[in-house]
Length: 360
Image 1 (cartoon, rainbow, N blue to C red):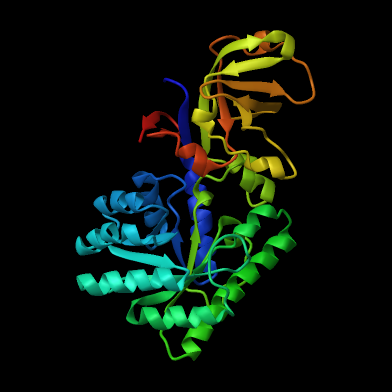
Image 2 (cartoon, one colour; image 1 turned 180 degrees about the horizontal axis):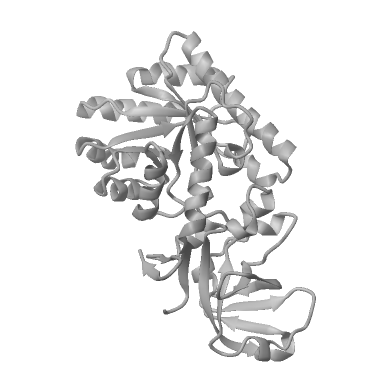
């Protein structure tokens, strides 16, 4: 097969999907996977078959793609920009149960005004800031109730995402941020209800907190995405083992610089992405962990640098006769730092089965 190519180990993926589904069920909540990780209808089908209810997307293009393939319950989990409202309206008019989010009075006003102009009551969730990571309204903010009152019948609930969990790597710290995520989102919902308004859905989630939470009391829905594949960032955080990573990039050795100990591959940043998410963690994997063609990690061999179509693999602490060990044409596999970013570099995956390779 041609390289570079994105490979999915389907057995590992199915185990990862089942693990998160059982986790949600044990915590008494629905699982709404974030499909930006893989953007693949076949993977969504596996998640739905395991018990997931609805999906989360990061673009309206993703929403359109999955709606065309039979998924109706879709949460667009990025604050709604007013110029995108006609696209959202078109989806709802076609029968898509699309839910929007907002984290500002201005954004909420734009949604309400546009809905009135077109006779549409959008379903809208208010994003809550649970950790100062990125977006959202503070649960104690007076603006929360103003937004909720403005949305009125459009208010579907509240949601949050503990992005700060990606900077942690101990069970205790992950459990603490998971509880903070839960408690602050539930607090926001309770404030809204105390004001006499409906707030049915309480949605939380990130892969690290989903796998670390001790309780999700008061929560109705769990969102997570990268768990289907996992990656080296998740491995460093401590929520998966290296042998649970389902996504890898198949590459071919196309040259050497023997005096430097370099193995040149045809997988550069156009294949792996520029994501260096492990750089700030306890273990830096460069642009990825290099494995043999069967997916077994080669100790100390990392993709140390990357150009657009060229990757440089190099041993960290030893000098190896790379020409002898990795002759021209050798096939290798590289585990990615960030599965979402690497997956997005490819238009299709190769599904690695037990007895065959099938393009999906």
